[in-house]
Image (cartoon, rainbow over all chains, first blue to last red; front, side, top):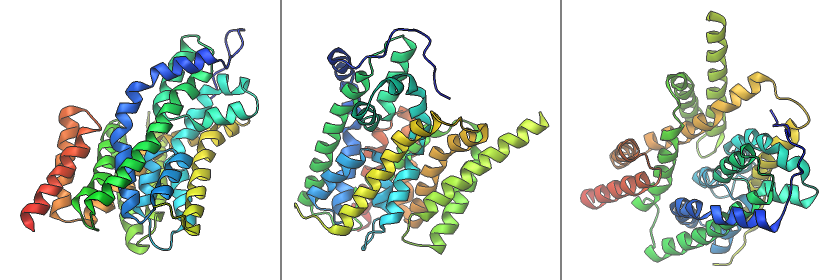
Length: 242
Length: 102
């Protein structure tokens, strides 16, 4: 799983690498703008204060997981459910981290864990290209992730404030934006016909569980696992018949 | 505005811990043990299925406005290939119907 070092030059963590990451970040900032606004707006609609919304974006720093958790946010807050939903919603990170192991292995102490905190989808893909190109400055990940984090918090706050300006009550069409965001993110995840059965299984299980346990996030966890196992079984069946 | 409620803060800390566990945990775990191939296969299906599990019940729980909004968002993805435009067109469609049907 992990990419082993093929060259003998050591992995660095320098100001130059940080600046290189910084210069690569502007496109990521623009792409993230609407997601931060929608997240802030949705957080406000579920009764989170401005400070709480900002704190969530600062500490979690994962848009889709935050929106999923907010989607099942009730009073009182189901602490275990939203925590588990965040973990499940970000499982892809577990597969992404090991591919940058060449860099992380070389970092010591806080540098390693801080750099991991700033790993998101886009700068992960960029870092992978850096490694393939033979560049060995791990501060690139920090430099490209930190501005996204800052703008993420800022747009969450702006979204929260604009929600209270519109004074949108429950059922306001503005809140469809959260669901529209998911639909927009879901469509490119379709990889081909092999996804059909897993997605159908996920939908069926999620629907069933959401009926049995309304107002919780367990249908998301159950659907994701059902789809994952269906995909696994399909591939194993295909492997046997081939 | 600046209120901090105990349960909310606890939930935020839990979400932060859960998310960091995936960022750091995958690297930490798989630098020690090699994941079995079936684990990687299963995990590769999780992101898409997770989104399906969120979207399908939420869309079906809505009404005609949400269904039209969903269709508009999907058509926009198809036409633009963008993940940003569908947010605007889908929400605008729902808003328009909300105004018209009121």
